Length: 489
Picture 1: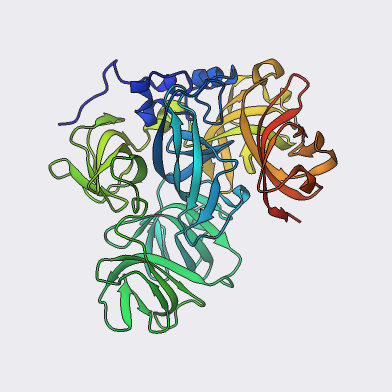
Picture 2 (picture 1 turned 90 degrees about the vertical axis):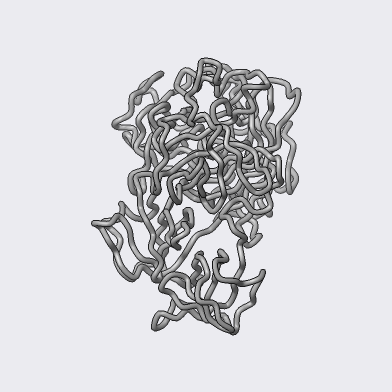
């Protein structure tokens, strides 16, 4: 029987306030990021729970794994918690190194890290981008809110983010897209991001579940895969979840695979240690039976969980589930139903950072174009906004733009000491103590450098930086990561 939250449960506004140990264990209710405007103001005072490195001293930490779509930046926000990411290993599921600028809202990731039990601050040690299916669109079904990608059904919902497209209605047969999301038991993909690509020059890929396995062929839904010339990682079997790569799109419904990788039984849950705190966001494959269901390929027991946003789970519903893994089963302590957090904080996505460009009511924040024209400003006004202003934004992505619903513009005095992260390329370089990044003057003279040294700083070098503004409006960096010394020319 479902439990409803009691007053002993951690209140939502406590996400950004100092937490007791027992409260911090309920990460989704008490972790950093995603809080109300009141909670954001608490973070603005420089305290805990910003997820980007507040001022509280760590007493003990909890090792965690979170998995789901990226819902914010200024740190990386996953499942309502902000993970400080500067210095973390960032790779895709092929082990290729990535820069934070390559990560977009809606991309599915797995984050391994720690949460400070006293403050709720979270830091990532490793972020893995879990790629989806990439290839040409073979059919569009507006009435059914979906499309086919090389024969695989891709389902679109309200929370699906589109990049390069205004939405499903703009999608055309033959266009090449990459769809990130959660693979369902029927082989369909519930999309969290659909990104338009310029071509399939980089090859195609598809995630799916094997059926009809023979000595050199199997099927992924209606797609036939010929793997006779492919490099196969893992053991193929009917029902196995795989990622298939190919140099070219299918011909006559047959994909000539160059690589096949078995991805274990779960989209996110493979290799998560038993007993580890685990939170995932995915789609219910069915209603629970005796309290048990599958979400993103993970078996979940919700019979003892606290429910938020309702108490009934139906097939096809997006859920956020937190608990601990025990013998491969996620024993849930908390379940958030679709729409719950949005109703609490005012939007599905959130940004914490400095305005890097501004034109009327359109701003760029953390690399995301934001429409501020419809937003309620809980502090400050649109007229007061400037390049370099620190803001906290809640909103919803529509096409290529995040339409802000709430904006908190922090004054110089309120933002001093608030730790956050930003990334970009160096400009107006004078010295390590004087250069620009996203319109802000940066002083990195006292920073710890990762994967490089201060001597590598120059105009055009790509950086990921953690720090805070001082009273003079200078961003004082505490940590700087140079990504492979590469330039973003």
